[in-house]
Structure formats: structure tokens, C-alpha cells
Length: 113
Length: 109
Image 1 (cartoon, rainbow over the protein chains, first blue to last red):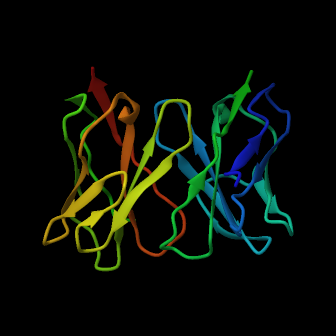
Image 2 (cartoon, one colour):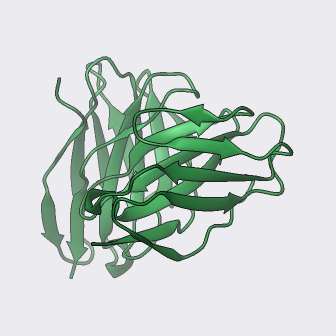
């Protein structure tokens, strides 16, 4: 049973560009959450998708958007990249139940030059 | 969201027990206490969670104070592979996880 997978592993972009990151949840999971982790910090919640809808959102600007597909996979899009967007982007999947654990992928390392 | 306080770092010797403390004095009655850890170059990994009673699983034990204002994650026999950042988190029914800075655990061989 594959766990949460993310692609690409690493990505380098320049300021002003747009980026799309992808996530496939653990088999059987229907909820996907995205987190941003700056160097030396804990992960920060960006948003969560369930039933193809954004259900919760953290304190991130509208430049950050997402999508969930019928197969529960998800994309994170970031427009107009800033240097400060350089971080590890983590995807986590879970079942639609707060007592369930979230399973994290290995992340995508985004570097903005 | 209720906040937690953890030491920035701790050290322990290999094959000895490790007690990682967490203070959460503003915990509400519906907050569950969750612990995650993040090994180097990996995403966070669930360790354990509980509400009021102490909990055990194959990875660790969670001891919760009677007033629930603090808890302790116990690794019974630390190995070098347990070196990680350990996050103590309160979750009140929201699916999102609010991470703090956690405790960086160093294991000495």
C-alpha cells in the first residue's frame, strides 16, 4: 500500500513565476491538507480539501490555491512567486474524521530565486 | 487554538528511556493531545494521541496529567533512529494541525 506521494521532489523557480505541486493521498483516504514548512520552523497549515471543495484555510494569501480531483488527488498552485515562498511543501491525507491521524508525504522542496 | 510549550531541544543516551514534556495549560475539555515527529528530510509522522487516559502503542507511551494541563511522551528505549523533532499538538475537532516549533531530540550513541 503506497503512502502519500508528492511530485516533484525538488523544484526551482524564479520570482513572479507560477508553480503546481501534486499529491496522491494514501489509499482509501478522502481528505488532503497542504502545509508549508520554512527552514527551521514547524509546518504551517495552508488549506484542506474534502469532496473536491476547500473546507478550511489557514492564513495564506489568495496566490495560494488548490484543487482536489474525483480520485482524491490534489494540486497546490502558487502564483506570482516570491522569494519567501521558498519552503518545503507537505501534503497530508486522512479520512474525514478528526480523530484519525494525518499521513504526510515526503514533501516538495521549492526554491524561488 | 490552544497553545503548547515544549523545550527547544533535549538529549538522551541510546537505549535509555526518554521523557519529552509538553505544557498546555489552556487546554479545553474537547482538545485531544497529539504527538507527531519529523525525522530528518521526511514529512511529519504520527506518534500517538490521547484525551484523558494514558495511552500506549508500539512507538511510545503518552502520560497525561490528571488536570490535563501537561503531558509527557515516553520513548521506552531510544535508538539513533528516534532522533527527530517532536511536536506536541492540541486538536479540538478541526482537521488542520497547528504545529509549534517542537523539541529537537538528540540521541547520543
